[in-house]
Image 1 (cartoon, helix red, strand yellow):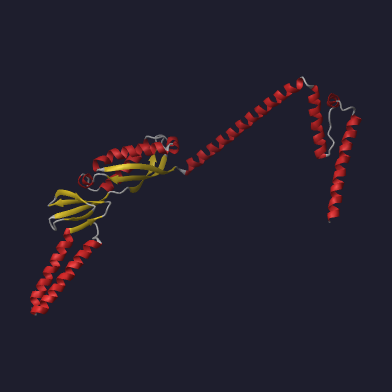
Image 2 (cartoon, rainbow, N blue to C red; image 1 turned 60 degrees about the vertical axis):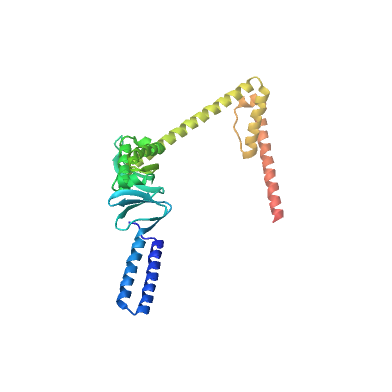
Length: 310
């Protein structure tokens, strides 16, 4: 039942105050207390009847009116009148979009996995007459229709499809629920699957499977990278085949960079030294010592600079 609006209360109080004022004035004029009481009672009855006859519906409300048990009309929004004790208002129907959450617990999927699914239904009444007359409690009926539809969809869906294709499940649920509720004057706007909960043991197994899949992909990517590097080295080797001078310069540069950065002794096969035309082992040793002295000189210069700053 809908509560009485402030406008209806204001009408009742206004008529009652005016009537009682007139009754009191009549009593002062005639000094007849019994007539004044009867007049006050009559005014109270009239005020009550008028307040019962006046109704106000909000912008989003539609009112179903029955006259002696038979459908009379739909009223609202705004001000309207009824005949007290003859007309009845069984429903004040809200035509706004309504949200309702529903769920299915421990329901088996097509591959026999128990899951808990939570969803939200967005719906609205488009035909208040059908919603009031064709079903006893349309809100409860929508709730049960949603739950049974969700269980039916879960039983026909594989777990992997349910986890990956929520939009498809939501669309299928909307279609099924809308077909069931259309005769009741209800339109299903959308259905959103919020969460799909699976057993913890299965969740751990799926996590391990996903981790193993990521490791496999990482190894495949690493192997492919090594193959690409080998191909690039092969292309570089083809470039140096017909250009020995470029090969010698590249080898000398690599050797020089290694000795310069690390200041260590590098053992190089004599065949490689001859190929790079660096001379004998003694010459190689002298080159190494020279680089070492150069590195020591740089370190000494850095130390002197620091001591001067101090």
